[in-house]
Image 1 (cartoon, rainbow, N blue to C red):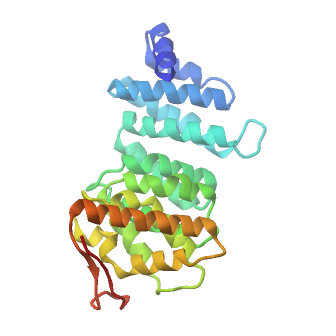
Image 2: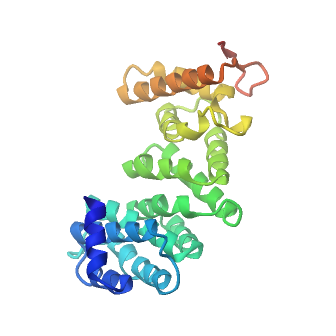
Image 3: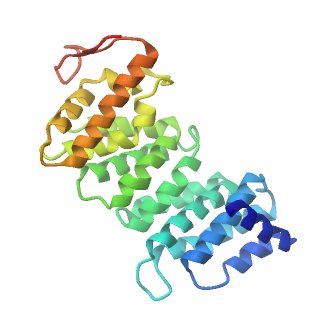
Length: 278
């Protein structure tokens, strides 16, 4: 139904740029932001990102969507529906306008953390950043995201959207996130829950039968198993236990799919031993 609506709007307007301008012409609202998201995503699917449309996407992002993230027409913070729709539309804008827009938006958002609009913006554009050209920025983004999550008082959107966006991003982001997760001293008080939050969000890449690099395989790191073990013992926190069970089940499943032993021995920096045999 969403695609049909977007196609109908595009069919009524011979010029996509004019349609985008019309959709941005009123006050920010959830309905307007969602309609704009639909049209931009449909244009992205059609591969229509050249010439004037790229410029229009840049203007939509800069002139309308970014301001919509920061405030409602009545002067208060933007509502959750506006935030989600505007963020999704921003991702399409970044893909239509080219990588320079994604880089500029990410740089600005990093300076505004931990504000929720900045988190939403980073979640939107992180998957648009390039593995080689934007590697330093990807590393900064990943470190900032993990440090924010580990602080324990991060906005819920960090776990809901920013960390999953890192899992969709290029490898430098994943590697930097993994390093940031392992960098503080082991067993820090109160860190088990936040660490499991990060691991769960990145599990698709850190616990994968298709992993290309052993140093990004969480099953081979003693710190991972110690964190999972600590989470399973958190009798006072059902969500932490649930995340620990999920990670354990996924690790066992991946090991079974690979039909290989999984061992962390004394050489591991955590000094623990764990073994799965299949």
